[in-house]
Length: 126
Image (cartoon, rainbow, N blue to C red; front, side, top):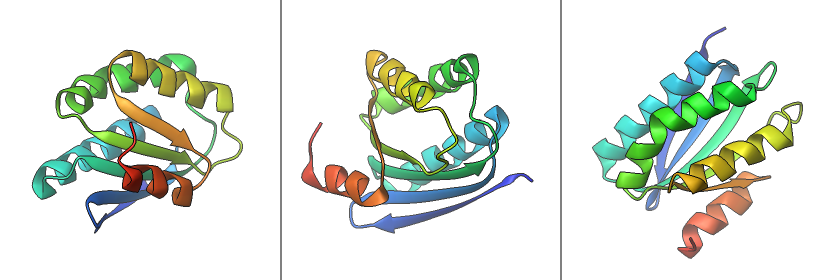
C-alpha cells in the first residue's frame, strides 16, 4: 500500500493526517505535499498525525528524511507538531528525529496525541 494524506486548515494551522505504509519514500512524499500546502495557504504551523503501518524507519532513514527537509522548515520558520500514532514504532528513533531536527534549527516537537500537539501550536510556544 502506498499512502494517503488529508490536509485541512484548522484556524492558523494545517492539520495533516497520513495513513498507509511506512517507508522512507512515503514519508518524503507526504512531507513534500505538506510543504506545498503550507506555501499555498501561507501557513507556518503544522500538525502531522502519522498513522503509517509497518516497521518504523531506521535511524539512517530518519537522518536522511530530516536532512532533506530541515533547511526548508528552518528557513521558513515552520512550527511542526508531530504525532506518531503507531505504537510499534521505537520511541527512541522518534526522539532521535526530534533532536536532530532541533539541532538543525527546525522548531518541531513530538507529542503523544493530536490534542496535545494542537494545544502547543495554539499556545504560540517555541
